[in-house]
Structures are given as structure tokens and as C-alpha cells.
Length: 381
Image (cartoon, rainbow, N blue to C red; front, side, top):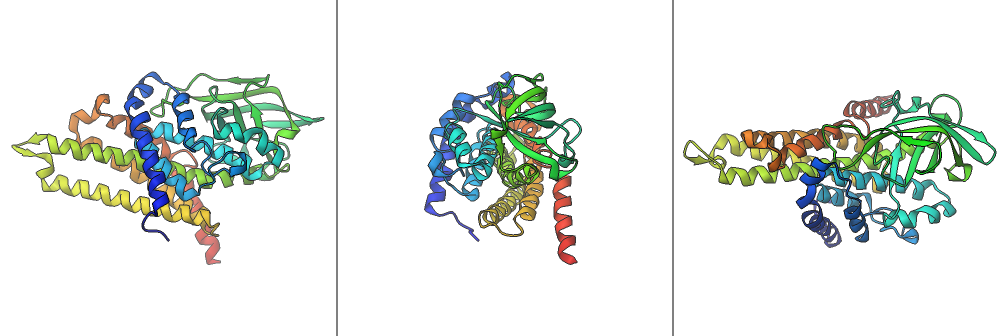
């Protein structure tokens, strides 16, 4: 295990930190207020290799590790967790094509995905299938060399503003064995999008329902064989859980840094806030918990890179722990600001709002506990 970053990893992290500080952080509050989807800035990030972080080099990817990705997404999230999280979703969808697509499919889509000339959304959740993803009902009926799609996806990040939809659809019977994965052109006739959802946070990326009404998608757009789509979706979520944990830690780190700076300036009862021992202890606990979550994230990322048998469980553990800690640290940073923390101009309340959803998406933290419990019980038999 690594407990210190090597020279290359430091360079990767510092590159992403510099990009976040220069290109993302100065605009994050405005993007949130205006519900602006910063595609131009994300494409700038892609010129630095962040559009295809762990995609193979033959199609323009950066061929980095999951560990590297964790460093990048944490760094980007110091500027804006929402923007970092969407780049992570794009990377997850692109990875599915890289890992499970044919050579023809990889060369068809990935060069433009790596530059983010094309942007991808991941489509799994449905109105009646969230945590129970294997119950999804969007139907893809075979009709010659096409599938005819009918159904609806819900809570799809980027929907309506992206080019490709990597969607899990039902091509067979009930249960996980009847699910396949299709790469769908977002402009396909028969596809429509709901209104941009009014959300607590994550306002700098659109979230919409995706409706399929007799939408025809070529069979050639299916990744791998029929019936392995659930496996593809779950494999993508292992990395997605690490990425969203990294985004939580980046946002929480910024909240902690803001609280430290505020406490140096603010006085009460004739003393600076950072001179009160009770408040010093709060800062210490926040820093300790963040460092513990970061160490856990690194361990899980390293396990996923080496294909450790316990990688799925470790990713679930890191996600449950890291996203809970990230939200709690940000919330305590808001409290340390007093009434000013509740004002948007200080940037703390946005971080709190953005990080709250990380405890829900990529599998709720209750589902993370279920994954861990099942693994423990199976191991005890």
C-alpha cells in the first residue's frame, strides 16, 4: 500500500488542483446560481487528459489508474464538486465502452469522448428502479438489426446536454440476466427529455428524465453480449463510487480550508475564533476524519487497480465512509462560520448542498452497508 504519493502522482494532483483553482473555483457560485453546465471548461480539462483518465491510449485515453483518478477528482472538487462529479460520470460511461466494447466500437466513440467533443451520460436508474437496479423495465425489443426502446430513465446527469447515453435496458426476462447495455445517440428519434430537475444541489449539471418511445437503436451499438448489462453496470459503479468519494473529500477539504481562514479573521469575546480550544478541537477532528477517509479511498482505489477479490467491498466501504465524512465536515465548517455560513457568497452552503447527494447516488449508503454485510456473511460460511 502507498502512504505517500510518488513524483508522477504529485504532478497529476497538482495539475488538477491548478486547473480547479484557475478555471473552476472562480465561477462555481455563478454556475450554481445560473444552473450553467460548463461544457467549455470541461473540454479544457479534457485537453489535459481528464476526459479519458483510465481509457487506453490507442483511442486517445490517458491510461492512468483508478488511484490517479481519485487524486484528480478530489483536486477538481476543491473548485466545484458538481463539475468534478460530472467529469467522473463521463469517465465512467466512457470506461464501459473501453472495457466492454469491441475494437470497432472503441474507435468509433472513444477518441471524441476522450476530448469531450462528445459527452456521455450513464443511464441506469428508473422511476421504479433505484437501489433495486435489477428491476429496471425499459424494454429493448429486437427488430431485425435494431432494438426498439420503450421506457423511462430517471435522475440522469447531463441528460439533454450530452451526446451519448450509455443505457441499461431489458432485452430478456426479469432479473439481472435480462439486462443489456446500449450506447445510444442522444438525438435518436423517439428520445425526449424531461424538464431540468429543481435540486438541492448539483445545479451546475442538468438532471433530467430520459423517455424512449419506439426509439430505434442499432444492435451494433450493444456492448458485449445480451444479458451482461447488469454486470457492466455494476463494474462501472465500483469505480464510480471511488470517484464520488473523491469528490466529497475535495469539497470537504475546501470547506475546512475556508473555515480555518474565517476563524483566523473572526473575533468573539475579544479573541480570534481559532484561539478557543473547543473550536480548535473541532478543526482537529475534521482534519483527522478527512485524512482517515482519504487513506481509505486510496486503499480501495489501489485494490481496484490490482483487481483484488475484495475490491467491490472496499469500494463500498470507502464510499459509505467517505461521503458521510465529507458531508459532515462541510456541515461543521458551515456551523463554524455561524450565520455567514448560511450566506451563498461564502461558498460553504453550496458545498453542503452539493455533497449531500453523494450519500445517495452511485448506490445509497444503505446499499453500501448491504454490500459489505453480504460479503462478510458469505465469507463466514
